[in-house]
Image (tube, rainbow, N blue to C red):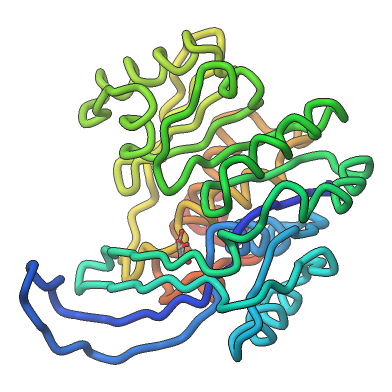
Length: 308
Ligand code: RIB
């Protein structure tokens, strides 16, 4: 089994459903609220675990009433949380609004995630000796990500970075990442190129490769997914058509599922379809962690859609 390490965030998602998002200064009545486990780090860890990876997470929860619930949930999906720390103060919170189209807006209060400093986790990184693949996002301090990337490179671990929420990244750091997985907003932040059309997406992907990225996947929601590596050939896979009720964690689900295919003999196109199927299932369900499918569900979906 592939050993996957996720160093990242764990959040309590406070989800409000609304018909339409309020304008600035406007108050609208919500249709009901839920408290569910989320956070890009733990969502990706859970997605990788459910898709068949052996996943360990390094993260941080607060000393509040959410902490135990969050840990129990992540553990319940088969993720090893023995390296998750407890930090004074509150756990990460994500205030999420979901409208009738399944779109979301998210405001993050980083809480314990923001307190995960390089020195806090240095000793836990001995686990890199037994790690095949490292998954990182941008919901913990950036200097912690940089330190982990350096250590992982020294140990020859394959590194996937999902720079979400969007952040600019130096060319030097891009060259240290094996695979970058990002969306339209994130690629524009790094390259300055909007990926609105297929041509612009290709230009933005080429720009990342010229900056030194080795492999890039651009996730474009209902417009599908594009992949490019140093050969500069773009591979496009359309999104599966589904009735979206909540797009929260769709990207995380894609990434976790993709990560489990590191050693798979499947073609790049087949891998993209597998990860896209996982994301497609997630958007038909409400919430973050609880919307993520198992490997069996992904394979069943693919059989139904393509007979494969
Ligand atoms: O990617 C979705 C996640 O972003 C949510 O679960 C929320 O916690 C925010 O981190």
